[in-house]
Length: 387
Ligand SMILES: Cc1ncc(COP(=O)(O)O)c(C=O)c1O
Image (cartoon, rainbow, N blue to C red; front, side, top):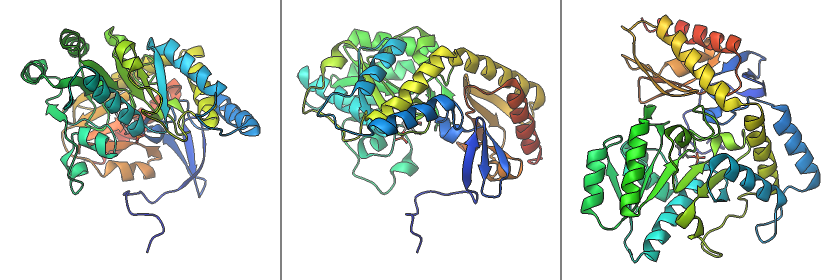
């Protein structure tokens, strides 16, 4: 009997250290990390600013409680408010928990408006987490199988179809919020056009609904701006993030604006660890580094560079399209290729395959052009093995 519960299909490799865009296994073999722990280590491994912040904080105080003031939490909240234009922040420990906070805000917002059976509209192929509420919001029947009954109060619509969305809103007076990802990280890198996000914003305004963006994966510079919505020139009412926020130290955040920012009051929500001094010190180093080193712009530039290289190197007989934004890249192949993730190990590269035929690349935001070239070489060699 294995000591670890059997919830993951793991590859037969164990990493013991990392440096920048590289990780090293127990035999000392090095791998180019084009996955960043699934969009987590945006600054790469062992980043000196993050390491220093963690060590410094651990030397002083790791945890107190949200019963008291936490100066690192205050400083991080102010930094996130500054980079996002939102009004305030609730801190959690993961993306799913950040989305739980968003769902609770939407439901209480509904109750405050006299809607006692509030409905949140969610999207096909969405991924919002594995807790019961976020699993319900997730549009993946396989992930939900065996866990019923799911929660009431969610209606699913096709992603990127504004007409269906509008019709569902018009037909359901109990709708209180629309929740979506600007790029569906787990759902095959399907990307919302900015015009769609703008239409959703307008629909929410017309109907007093909360526009809630899940930027757990797209946030923290990943798509070429601090949050993806900033490129669409809109403001959501609620935005959630996690992953890249802590560069590997578990932390999530639910940011809110205007009416949504006042919904949760003392006693309505909480978390023992959420926003603790250690996690906030690490995340503050991450946010400051992304801003000071202009890593959003760098991510956009390297994303464009990688796309151009892939377009040039992979034939149209193999590559259907390239999806995503910035350094969130989905190479959609004509055939299914789940085996490439394991095969990548022998080519010294970490990557992921999602939706059967989409090679997902999420390299660190600060990769160099030489490392980008190296990713292209290794991925192209890997794809050649399919023929
Ligand atoms: C868009 C999105 N939302 C939520 C989550 C869940 O985050 P966590 O695994 O930190 O709970 C993920 C994780 O992949 C995600 O990609």
